[in-house]
Image (cartoon, rainbow, N blue to C red; front, side, top):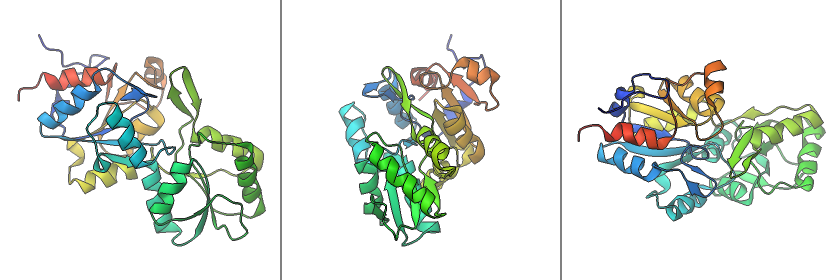
Length: 279
């Protein structure tokens, strides 16, 4: 007899009716360079059912091209159209709220390059004419970068933006500080707190859904963080699945205020659930 229940025994057969699957990446479909079991099969099954998958990630340390190359090496068929990142969301935010402004950027070379290629005026120097301060998830962080950022944060009351609020990024040995933790360090030093872009703001979900003209009822967000992935889906009015392969634990779900609609051990269980549907 087929199983259509989630981790906590909730009936989940309705997930077979979804047509747009918005999948987080770190902790959801892979960990560093290790693809989780069932990922490729899940993506294939989504396409077989006539659906579409898009990776929505808060990780601003890589460009879209970097992500395309990374997942292709892992055996996933994907192009630029399969991704929407917090870097892209940040570029849209800057274009709307601070057009043509000079943006100081603390982030990886890929982050800076992608913003520049999107038409944002960026600099990595603490120049006098800087008009906006931007921080991303920086795997190339140095004390010199932090000094420049702190200098600008305390020089003038400039707008302070951060690409994403994630506190930790999952790696093979556990976690490393993500953008949110870097910003907490800056806040402790300067008293300045940023405006965060990316999940849990609903914009990333809504932009992709509207791009492909899919209703909220036919959209599903799948992720491993309650306060970003699941909360973004909730705010966007779409159903959510939390997988237990990343940051969130069973205890977090049971005791926390943010509740996913469904909980699964991992993406393999989602593939198995969809795989039981008749073609």
